[in-house]
Length: 239
Image (tube, rainbow, N blue to C red; front, side, top):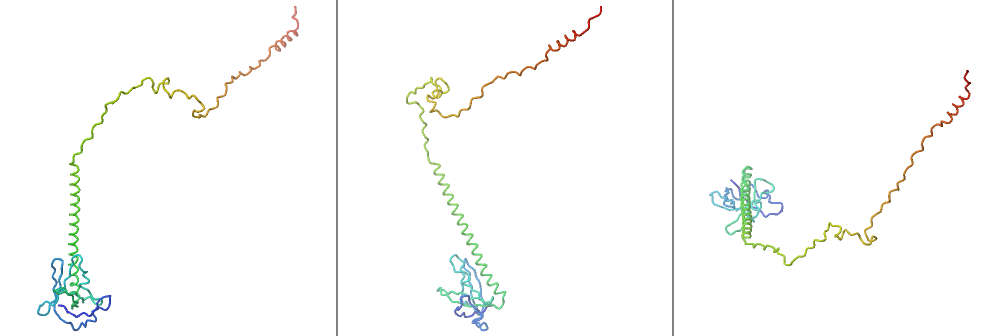
């Protein structure tokens, strides 16, 4: 069960308000039905005799208006909504609906957004599959082009001709390591033009050291003289 109301023109940018709809006197008391087909969710409003009064298509394909534009909840209640209905000539009309129970209003809103989320997931899966198909096609084309280039015949380079065109004269007299024949072994003629090499001072000349003087031994003449004096002083032997 739902109630239909005539919606006054929107005066505020914040959204519709149900308090100005004369909620005690609905235009019609009927019922609604939600049918999903493809990427379109259709809300059908019926009168007491189950005749269709209005249809509100909610398109969920890419480029369609947002769901909030088609089914707009009022700002002052959670049980009332504004539907943008559409006839066969694509003309639009705004109709207000309301529910007696808050749970029914919640289920109505959840059903619409669940369908929209389902379509979004399907569209994303299709887009991902298309991207994978394109990447695989590019990879196959790249691999086929590489195979085509690999099958092309590349002529071998000619071998270089190592045969001597003219006789070569070899001189075996001068050897680079022979000092007699090597040009680099001869000293430069001008020493002053040669590279300057620092000269070291010559070592000091060798000086022979004289042996140390011999020790002076005690003179024996003095001892002999004393001994002679003793002999002269001795008394003569008795006869």
